[in-house]
Length: 142
Image 1 (cartoon, rainbow, N blue to C red):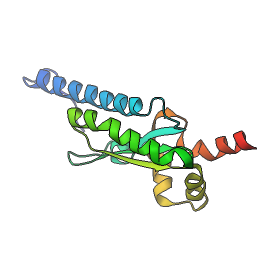
Image 2 (cartoon, rainbow, N blue to C red):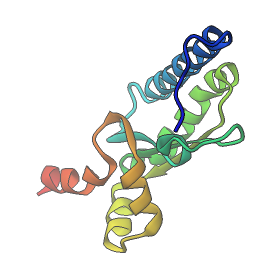
Image 3 (cartoon, rainbow, N blue to C red):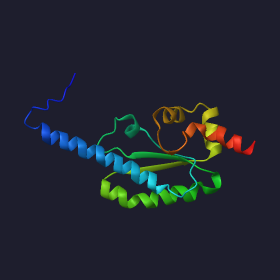
Image 4 (cartoon, helix red, strand yellow):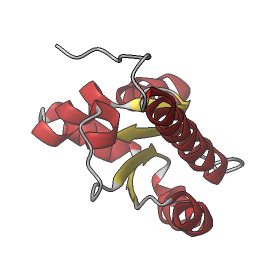
């Protein structure tokens, strides 16, 4: 069991470090959110080690999105391009994975292990939960 001893002589330095890292993570999430602004994205989320909180110094940032098949390639490419500057400045490696509604339907139907972990880990940044994509699309198209 660990506890932070705020009376220790290095406590102010450690507190400042943890605060800076927390602010950096918020800035990264904001950059990801802004990268999708104005793009036709149903769901934008972070998953994997960063979402679980067990990422390390060499971990990438797994970013998932759900969009219409017709928009998918352009949206993924646009988000990747938009994140180049923030990734360099904030020191993170974005890994963008795009899914269309048919992908989500197939992964759910097959109870795909990767998809099950994505659903469990996902931190939604914009839009709806990724697993809600199929029911939302079906509601729109009857």
